[in-house]
Image (cartoon, rainbow, N blue to C red; front, side, top):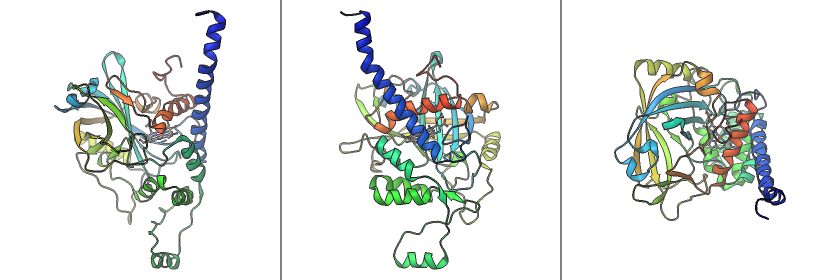
Length: 359
Ligand code: HEM
């Protein structure tokens, strides 16, 4: 029977069914995030919509190759493309609003190969599973913003409720009320929701730290596979704007352009090594701060890319675009992002993704 048409068809059945179930979930995830931003503009990313592409290079530290055999950790200079972004899915630029920021990095390797690392300014994610994330997105639908009166604030203080910052001037709709209610009922969402509510705005994309939040498995030169988490630290230090005097709506791209015209900006890649008992498949649970951290290398941001469309807007980063030496963990959110980002890329007409070279 092996190799007959009937046999191939029979074998294709379950596999095809799994593929289409995955496609359906990917589409559901993308639709769920789109629904949270009613002014989403077709043809753009449904979240992290507004970004800026930067070109630079990465050089691994001397110890990096001991801990990971992947090509970009071997010490030679690797060209890199970075897209910094605001977290919102709205096409209206509000740089001064409190928001999560993103840093998607592509390391360009030999023979046109590449690997991506996607990070954000929160240290943990909102949901541990796909079902939970869909429920979270449902809760995060935007509702009219209400500013509590001085009396309500005083009452809240007397009841020992955590103070919630006033919305930035001009914000009329927000998902904050729904996400707070969700976090009150779902412990796994609490850390990310509360951090997101108070995170503020960075003075520069090059002055924020960014976390990849998932666990990855890396293969060391000693043959050991270790669970790790990556984050970027800015050499210039972390600085946020003064919430009492929010800056104008549009400053982050120009700030980066001016900064890089004067001098390159460096970001250090840190890798924390997990220990027994650490959450390996749950991005809502950060690891203890005292985990061993390895300096894996330095990314030097050199210039804002001239062709923003080709270098950054059209391309599609994907957290599952890995290379020998780095593997996915069992984190279901990490695994679901592969299909969701690819579906989003197709929906917005982005350029071909190596997962789907025919597209
Ligand atoms: C199931 C969970 C998630 C879903 C469904 C989701 C969905 C998406 C989608 C659809 C995009 C646009 C992709 C494109 O069109 O190219 C995107 C972009 C992005 N996401 Fe997520 N995301 C999830 C989790 C995360 C997590 C955990 C992080 C934290 C590291 C993250 C950070 C980002 C960033 C930084 C971007 C912008 C990437 C770029 O500049 O191209 N996302 N996300």
